[in-house]
Length: 434
Image 1 (cartoon, rainbow, N blue to C red):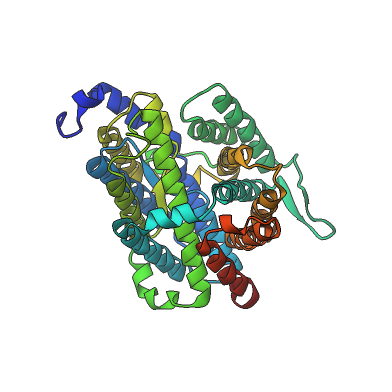
Image 2 (cartoon, rainbow, N blue to C red; image 1 turned 90 degrees about the vertical axis):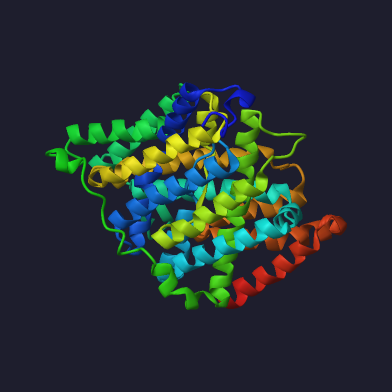
């Protein structure tokens, strides 16, 4: 085992790797409750999505550990689950089964791109500023959803949105959760988002805002059935070949593409695994990520991707895939705690959405706002996502304005031909498909 995971070469041991695996799990365990809560709004069975989330995370993380030997964990991605729920299903009216088929196709395409080498070419074609803008925009969108779920922000006929009744019990609980979580993270507590949810749930029970478990059966039970979601993507596979679904698939692919690449580089750099500014075994890591998406879509969840929270495990000493094996085992164990879904209400999960949104918005600092031709497409990408309630629309608008602005500035030579093709496709999408 030590030889397989190269413990001596990487200067680690079982204890360090085990602590790292546990730390990573605690840092991202919130997804076990946030993802089912979000996808349930599409009409999907919450219990089945809970199991699918845990299994997709366990399988994807195990593949990453065994194939690439990286201390990187995977789970259904934040942002992609919001796109799946609110843009694809709720706004566009696409059945969740068809949306799952779209996730499946995007995973299969990702596998092909990984083996053909096209991945690097596409990544290099899209400017870094737009990649950062997409990440920040998704962060604002997720935070907006969190504020809505907590009723901190509510609909208003005069101003579209307004501040809700902050004296209402559930809203006060969510506000308390935000304060607790930001304090924990500010103090450097690893797994602060997860612990914030636990504290918020306990306080909610004390003040009768959250159901109180009455016995062991309300905490621990057999795993819910996967039947409501398992294989649904295959039964609707033929419905993905439309213009509208093409844009959906490209968006799934695009966001996962760069989220994965950024996470792998960031975590590997922190772990000291980069060699000559290159990521060893990158192909294996990307295959694990794309295979996890295919597995997750088959089981019944949105795109599975690498989690930047893995950096917390690296900070705790993780250097090998053995840490990922420990994290995967904990996700498997979590399957038997599905009754806690009744305790983790929207008031408990809303703070997690808001805090994750804040973290994702950190990429705003890297955008050169003093260059107007760059600032325009970046700003429009970011602001359109929450205002149009659509990640795809934000990406479309930003990708249309980017080549136009650089052309107007006399910098057309800096625009990769792929960006012009994408701009035309997005114009057609907004004009005829959307």
